[in-house]
Amino acid sequence: MPIKFTRSDFPKGFIFGTATAAYQIEGSSNGNCGPCHWDTFSATPKNVFKAENGFTACDHFHRFEEDLDLVQACGFDAYRFSTSWARVMPNGKTINKEGLEFYDRLVDAICARNLRPNLTLYHWDLPSALADIGGWANRETAKRFVDHTNAVIQCVGDRIDTVATINEPWCVAWLSYFLGHHAPGLRDIRAAARAMHHILLAHGLSVDAMRSLGTSNLGVVLNLTEAHPASNKPSDVNAKDRLDGIHNRWFLDAIFKGVYPQDILNKLYEFMPKNFEDDMSLISEPIDWLGINYYTRGIVADDPGEPWPSLKDIEGSMDKTQMGWEIYPEGLKNLLVRVSRNYTGNLPLLVTENGMACADEIQNEIVYDPSRIDYIFSHLAAARAAIDEGVNLQGFFYWSLLDNFEWAFGYEKRFGIVHVDFETQKRTPKASFNEWALSLNS
Image (cartoon, rainbow, N blue to C red; front, side, top):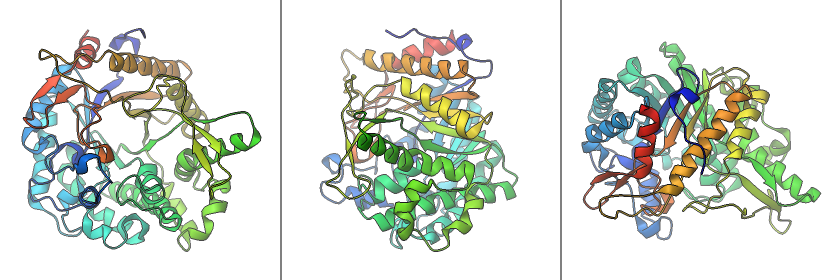
């Protein structure tokens, strides 16, 4: 079992938090929230487990006070949440007063519990009206994102600790427009290439807008993977480089160097928007911190029978989570060190998501999840090891506070440290919640 920790094992002022996302917990049927492309995706057969959706989710819209009490009771310093674009602007244009009032109350409630509000402006709930014009494949969507940014920041920006523009642009673009696993479920390299650019353009435009409003402590959240080849064969090593280029370097190079990696751009260039190069200075506008989401590594082999990028996923040999993801904490340390040395230098880094899904069950009012406890402590140890190697890591957020709507996996996959009965909405803290509380409050 990994060694447990206390606050004193981390630098003074290190921030411990937990995270959620709007569509996954709020309940989109409340508060005049508009439709988003996840509603459409979920309503299409075979896209989402049991055709489940986020209409009710965890009913956080009505239960946020109770949920924030749990964050406070556990001893966390910060709460990372997102605003729903479809709630703020149901038709992609017009502000929904009731939606903004909800986030105003939410942020007040976070602050009232002496928690730091860590805001994410976009966590995947694109208004259907913008999906109708092509979503992230259309440059107009990036421009419209500025309207959402301005509306939210003008409402709650005075009380926010950090603001992330976008959560996981690789998922927004490649996973959703090329692999087709997330809304809108496309498998189109042209749409994917454009989405890969426009989501970064949205980030740059949003940062620029917030700077003009005087907002500080701005960042973006990337989901990174440590890429490994299935063998030492040159073809597999090259496959690993392609995975790394699409998943990691495309976003890191653009944000911190103002260019796209040439090996990947060579293949995507013909599909890219016209004059995309003109946007690179805006995309690479300085940020104040970088968030990294980490869950597992990626092992790939060359798959010459398939079109570029010709990648075949290979299952690792280590224990797996309920998602089937290999538990590989060393990858977190390696990524933090790599990003720090090659891209960010002394720029503050945050682990903005890290966690595991388990097939949790309540027995005698108790949820015993020892594998999650081991996962948490092993990844905290990896974070501590990165700090020891000179990484300016300033915080760690567990994903997630609550069991929730886990996108295409519906409600089956449970990441929370708080169990949710989705029929009664009863919350039951798990053993992992208690371990967090012991560590944070000791």
